[in-house]
Length: 231
Image (cartoon, rainbow, N blue to C red; front, top):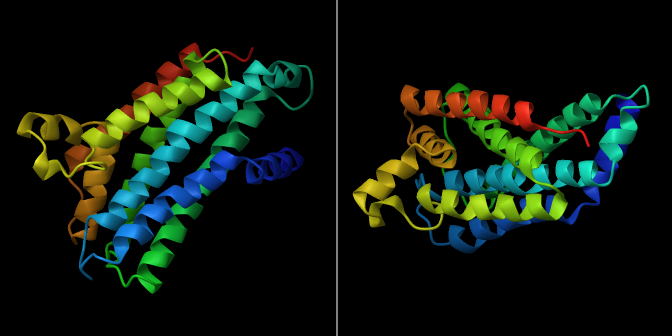
């Protein structure tokens, strides 16, 4: 298992998508960060949600669908290293990548841009875990349904931009029609972004939104497990 993790880590560091997931949110943060107020509670949560969304909807499903397309999962089924081990390692590595991306964003925001960082650690961690779980669940479902890596890439991108819009990551929610903004709040990425903003504002996230993210993670993960194919 350790050898598999080391090999997959090397492959992930060579994957352009991993660098993309790190640099795009950082670019957005730096470009817009010079004009924000010290107590801003919007930009950094937005960048964090973008980072997790890119890993969950772009990198994770593309990697898993590509492995299945190339027969890697099928060949592993004939070795002592079962395909499920590869799936577990990939999920762990993608989670570490999401943590690293968010850690980089917070480090740059706090040290370079002087941005506001939240004081509520536990609610912030819980929000991050539930938001990441819900986004990864969608990524797993995309990987389960996509016939190959290219299709998974396309489906992930196709899902990401509407979800990002509804979540207020592209256009502020106060500039949207009330009905659209309300719907967006209860999407996985919308609930994640709103909960992060509440943490940054110094309040405990809405239990309803935390429950929404948990429900998405459980239901969509179960659906992905039902449809996932090893070959």
